[in-house]
Image (tube, rainbow, N blue to C red; front, side, top):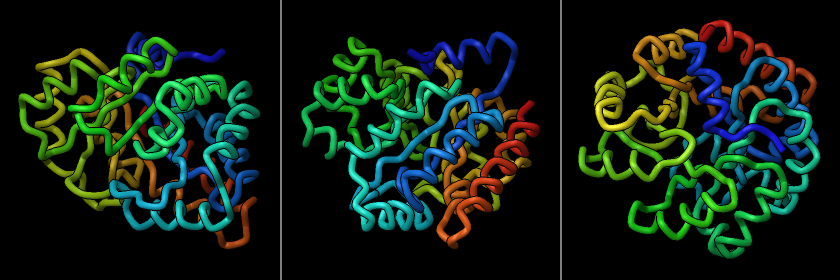
Length: 266
């Protein structure tokens, strides 16, 4: 069921396309809005959709996404509820779903059980921002066997030899963090990104998605020009969906913003 992450990137690369990868937090403002947002993003041209599992200690997330996760947890959104939602929605979507979760919930459930559960629900990719390189094997091997591609993160502070190791291990695509620190909207994309893209290109032919801080169509175009294979946009979407009571308006804003980004990347 559904295309793999790497197959989706291959399709795009065959036509010199750049992947648009929106991120939203599951359960904010509620799970039914999440379902509608997933459909809207898919309609508006998302190539992959990153769905964040709410977590109590989201170290890599900036204030917008942290607040969204907190709201979702306060409403009692659990991993099981998120997987039930994906099970229902994934067959309708052409964009593969990439789950964004911290390592602790995976360990709590048991690595193999977690991977089987998310695969059965329809998830095709996984991002674990706090998974250390030294512990990757315990997740990557069973994930590859089950059919879940694990994306690893490279930051501006990552040393060259570690970049090489991460690039070798990575499945699906490499997640290049455009700024040092947490996620969030930035006015300027770090100049180091252009250098990092070239550095990564010299050690791998795997697709590279750039995220953390992308908040405008102009920035998305800039990243494509610099050679990114995918652009990941999170806080700017989460902010548009944030609860103001007007979920219909929020969905419309998300869809419209996604269309703008799609146009910028075409």
